[in-house]
Amino acid sequence: MATLAASSSRLAEASAAFAGPVRLSEPYPGSPPLWIEPDGDIPDLPGWMADNHEAIEAALLSFGAIVWRGFPVSETDDFIAMMDHFEPYAKGYAGGTSNRKAIKGPAMEATRTPPQVYIQLHQEMSYMPDNPRALAFWCKVAPDSGGETVICDVRGLLEEIPEKTRHKFENFGARYVRNLRSTDVDDWRADAELRHATWQYWFDSESREDVSAKLTERGTHFTWNEDGSLTFWNSEPAVTTHPLTGDKLYFNQLNSQIQNRWTIGKERADLFDRLYGDHTGRPYAVSFDNGDPVTEEDYLAVRDLFEARKIAFPWQAGDVMLLDNRLTAHGRHAFAGERDVQVMLFD
Ligand SMILES: [Fe+2]
Image 1 (cartoon, rainbow, N blue to C red):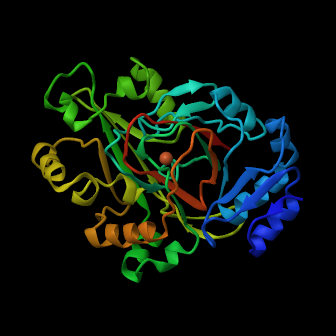
Image 2 (image 1 turned 90 degrees about the vertical axis):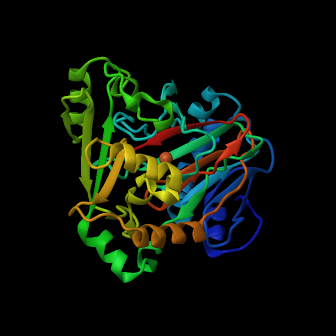
Image 3 (image 1 turned 90 degrees about the horizontal axis):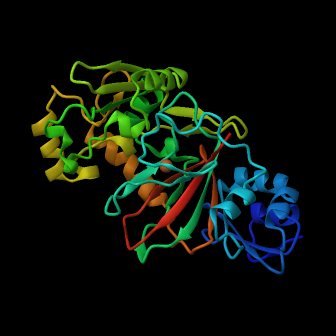
């Protein structure tokens, strides 16, 4: 039985379920994560993980997230080996909205989104018809300051959204539209300041046929425009029912993908309005699926709930964090210095 550092019923349950010399705690009582530290020698971490698979899965459901600190995870191979008993997400990340590249096997960069940008809390790929069940982050290099992979318990959040806005999330669904320009067309959209990516870069391909096939496989609608750009979109529910716990959960990325004065700053939002207007496809455009915009009132109602529930702890090199993708949202604070955080997605 693991050592118990504090007491709550779910912590007591986890403590009874985990084997081996580990110390469990709940640093933010009532919120994720379950915190696991070594309390003795664990020479074979992947073996310990496999032996404790059931306890890990049960804790993932009760806490929504688990953090391992102080274990020997110093290379990508260690991270992959540690997570070996989790099923990699078979569909991969093609068509995803974050700017990230593969590192090795199932391990990817967390994101290339610039350090000054706060990535708002979201559930991974909730804008797609199919999405990972769980995901794990590993910190190889912690930044000098900031850069926390923030998390938020989504259970009960939907119920706290004011009725007027909640009604829209529950009944209207979500629509996510992306536009990727083409490297062949060198117009104002190529200005690096706009961060309007090309489809060739995004999909690592020069072939329209390849990209069309990937999008079709993912169930994503798309059209190739006359200016060479690619527009693709998904219509998805904005709430979901957790397949194991039965919780009805907020599950969408309307708030994290919307580009308004709150998310990208007034200056940039005005610039986008001036340049793109209603005539040119924007890199990101979201709305409710009935065509209604996400109003500032809607946006702020959800943002304020996420922010009030947010948990942020500084990364230390070697930390691993596993999340249930439906129960727990994640995001990233802006940071200074070098930061290397890698991610794996699981079915
Ligand atoms: Fe993410």
